[in-house]
Amino acid sequence: MELELGLSQNMLAGLAVIFGLLIGSFLNVVILRLPEKMQAEWRRDSRDFLGLEPEVSEQPVTLSKPASRCPSCGVAIKPQHNIPLISYLFLKGRCKACAAPISIQYPMVELLAGLLAGFFVYHYGLSIVSLYGIVFSYSLLVLTGIDLHEKLLPDQITLPLLWLGLFANLSGTFVSLNEAVVGAIAGYLSLWLVFWAFKLITGKEGMGYGDFKLLAALGAWLGWQMLPLVILLSTVVGATVGIAAILFAGREKQVPMAFGPYLAMAGWIAFVWGDKILDSYLRFLSL
Ligand SMILES: [Zn+2]
Image (cartoon, rainbow, N blue to C red):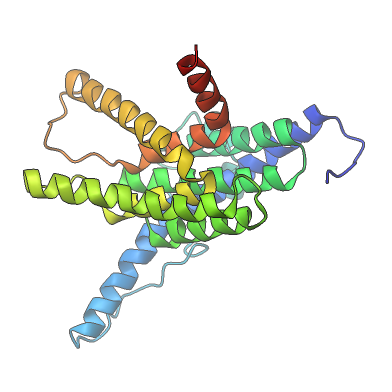
């Protein structure tokens, strides 16, 4: 059911972009703070397990505290310098206090968050599909950001994403519940098998358990039929970027590269265009 607000689809999409830009600021905070929070918890748990006293200087890191600071000079960021995208452009990408360059990640995440919200509202209006689409996309965006920085995909995001995919498909929003459940299981197992085969053959670990959980989540959202496409797309994009990195950036072949961002990108493409891609593929086969 769509809300009738007397606004055109274009205006709604425009409002969604602004809404997305604001949420994008928050997503930046999650990308930055969630790993810090997890590491603080691991330290605390480890000290607890070893029977050590808790660290005295330990300042609890939460998503809202401490307030945003420049990572270079530590000066608190004023609200007027914290406006999504606009502040970055206005400050020409530099800290107002110390002129240290601000990571391009911030405006990129804000811009993507804005465009993604606009994309879904433009195509699907104010609907449950748009809401699911935006939550799905933002989860993948945060996972990509964290995996690029920390080489990990937090359970705090992959697992709720999996449950939410199953929940959405309880009423068959995207695929049937059967396809979603089989998708989640097959997603996990397929990468788990690849991981162990790779480890037995080469003695190396090519990816992490977070990747299995992410593919399980994608299976829950997209159904098992999309998994081959997701794996194919992520491998093609990953191999292309990997070869380009070795050729142009002189990156060493041995440096492990995060696989999560490619899975996330492939999952998003399959979510939006998967049916079309599979349809044209099947039509191509039957020619
Ligand atoms: Zn600064």
